[in-house]
Image (cartoon, rainbow, N blue to C red; front, side):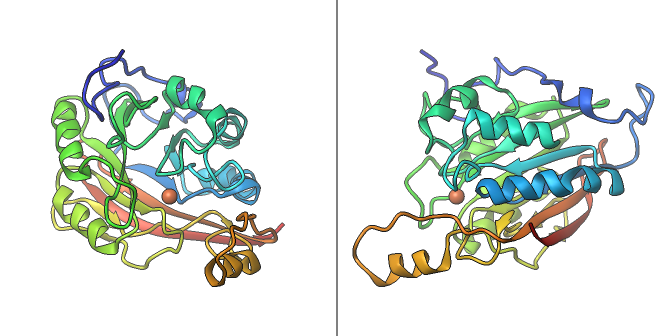
Length: 295
Ligand code: FE2
């Protein structure tokens, strides 16, 4: 049984997935390009979210010269959790690494792929012995990129401290990479902002997920960390956080349990495109991207 602390539990067992194989190589070895572009896609919700990815992602990658695509996928299987089938759909559509939050283990059938596939990163501050890994290292051309996920503690189920968990992981990564992206899956704006400032200059980007409504506070913090409180969701926008409006109202106004069915129709893709200097790890730009369609 793995008794190493959470967050670093899988570090020594980490592998280099085949992410780089599907990425364009624009530089010769030893000549890092001056900037790399990392696209982070906010919570992908059910089938509508997957359709949005399939419809837009390849075009986005080509138009914006994207090197690495990350997506939060904790809601991708009918709105709750991740399964092998849905994970494979996202990989096939062009996502390189999936991150997770509080719902990542909601579908039991997905536990196996979360544990085994190095392209999936679950929250690092989950309890010890949780399947999977809290961070991964990925070769993107000549650059190693670290991807971490943590969940917040304000108005969320109890977990270990995300701040101290990140301290431990970042210390272990110090000599391995300067490019690190953190998905902070949290509810409270206060907690998200605090983590952004806490990590300023220590990671390339802190991107918020979980609350599904994009915020307009994208910025580069003084020491070079890109930050946004909430990237927003990728899924049915004409809804309450992806759930059919009528059902969401029943759940709020009544006391009887009502199954939260996903909405259909109008679909939105929410993302941020982050420019990073691969040598220093400092971010040089962050841009919100939103696409809407009715399919
Ligand atoms: Fe969540």
